[in-house]
Length: 188
Image 1 (cartoon, rainbow, N blue to C red):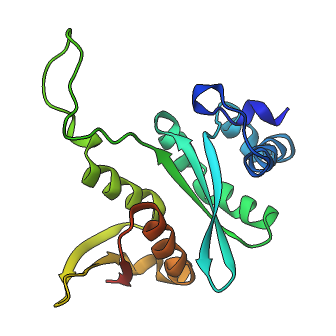
Image 2 (cartoon, rainbow, N blue to C red; image 1 turned 180 degrees about the vertical axis):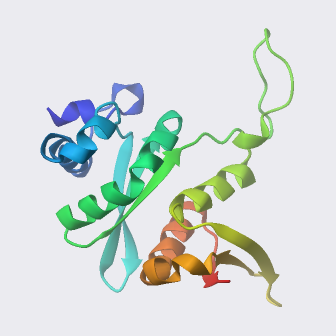
Image 3 (cartoon, rainbow, N blue to C red; image 1 turned 120 degrees about the vertical axis):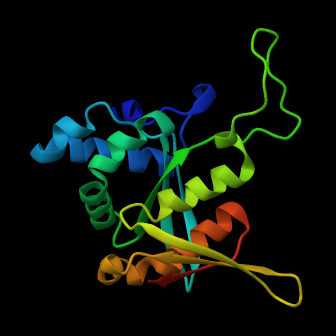
């Protein structure tokens, strides 16, 4: 029954963890009257647990890009309910995006360069937006250290500081695992 809530690419079978996340989505749809209508047409493409340090884990749920706005409408309630179900682990929803390489060539029918939204930097910026979703990013800075390392400073809106302050470590470690970039989150 939970198979209807997860659709993997290439008709691959979901693993046990992905099936449990899909089952919880289905349970939420069945038991919660306020989420029932919103969750009816929504599904996920993948889910995985990410180690965030200190023996803690976060859950990253991948959603189809086309359903991103529909998920964002119920994001706060859905994340709150999933965090209750998975015993306080932080839950992050990220849209599934494609990165096209520099050598991308189109088919014979269509010509032109690769879309800007499919470049590596555009996808990584979009992942950062998805990770921080309810909070708005108000600024970004890149600091180059003397040893050549880059540190990205991301400034979040200070009006959400009370809600997000405990999650910034999770945001930084998940973004680091997905993109191999060191990020620090500050409030402005």
